[in-house]
Amino acid sequence: MSEDCELAQSIARNLLLSSFTCDVGWFGDNPTLRFSSKNAPNGIWLSMPGGFQIVPTPDLPVTRTPRQRDLLLLESIYGCEVKAIQCHPDSRLEVLFTDETLLIALDDDPDVHECWALRTDPGDHIIACHGGGFAVWQSSSTPST
Image (tube, rainbow, N blue to C red):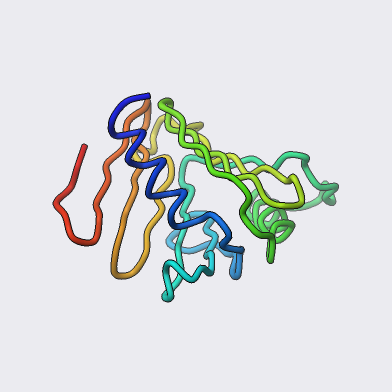
């Protein structure tokens, strides 16, 4: 695992382990989750412009727009507590919840330069770059790429 991936992994675990999803929505044209945690009193935001997947996929009505479908998928993990986090060198992020549901933030859109972003306000930022690699800002440091 590369140094930037290890740093992203460490920060993501510190922020998300034992947190829970407290808000779901479509913010800034991207599917987004907000997590609540004692490690980030103002919340932790996960934006996924590169796409995402929920495993197992909940049964959803077929007559929905893609945006409606995404919101219903995100709603299925509302209130779930995070059990494990894995950042992958290919820019995927896997978030496993205590109910064994898996959220995978993807790198599926070649027109999107940032696959997903995890941030606190103010504080840490992790941006997964299309094709692999991470840009990481820690609250008291300069960017690392």
